[in-house]
Image (cartoon, rainbow, N blue to C red):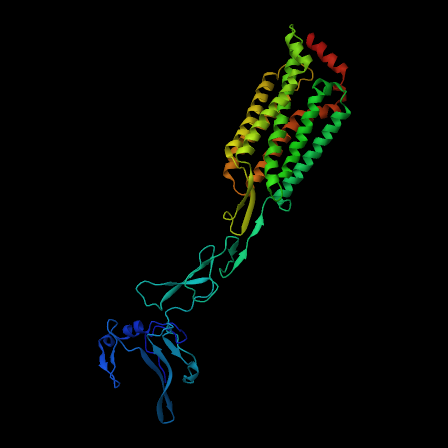
Length: 445
């Protein structure tokens, strides 16, 4: 009967084996054995000496009262195919209570998802099964090392196969994207309703006193600001990446320059009541309206510099998330982006300062207080935006920018126009020349 010796370093199923190493580790005295065979060959087990290149593996069998040997394999130490051990398992006869090849390895086989890690100072048959690291898999048994997944794929939890990554962006199907889109749509409808109210009551004192033309321009610009986030939601492409920033910069420049113009108009309207022809000429000529095209032209120059040097482009982020490929718009030139934001900040700051100085002018329909508070809300939103923008990643950056656009625009709409709509719709008694004359008379007395 074939009995594997203790410490035999490999399963009989294995084709590749360093047999000499195993035999020399079998018993220390074997290393010193050296003799001449009947064929005249010099035989030894010392690794440093020449050794025989072929060994027969025999099965010792007992049949009734007879014992005999049957060759079941051989070991060829110098095989050109580098296959040392050959076993014909069919010819092996096992006892009745033992019917399989013996396993003499220190560790069971490592299944898929694991790789064989050899242990230091131990035979080659002793190893540890180590779970494949992140982004790697093994799909075979006893794999020597894990293989990395392609960059467009990620490993499954068992680490035995790669799965394709799904493409993600701030879409209308996401709960966040849907919430932002619905908010933008509701605010756009609200702005359109306010515009309709002002258009219907354009001849009322409160609308005429606050320069209805500028009010209409401001409402249109606010409507465009609320529609701007729809360029940020959805799968980005080269055109949408460029239009996002151009539209955002221009409509906000138009809105802020209109607020600044309205504030200047309030101051000039009050100053014409005092002696002097200069203020009267400025107000009558409407030269203050040139503030709007001048401010927009400056912003166009900044945008032209941005697009001419390093325009926005599509960025594919394949590393930030484990199982997703994130598509977003890269700003291109960060310096140009912050120059555009800085210019908007300067316009907002100037508008806030001028409105603050004119907040106490004694005018019945003076909206300087509302303009002051609206610019305070606007500046607060964008000052908060900068640190939050830098602390977020991936598609959350887009959501933060969209939220800032909606919040700041809603601040302008609510602070400037809602009080007027309240008077027009709910307090029409205050929206009359009679009320204006009464207040003016009481102020004189």
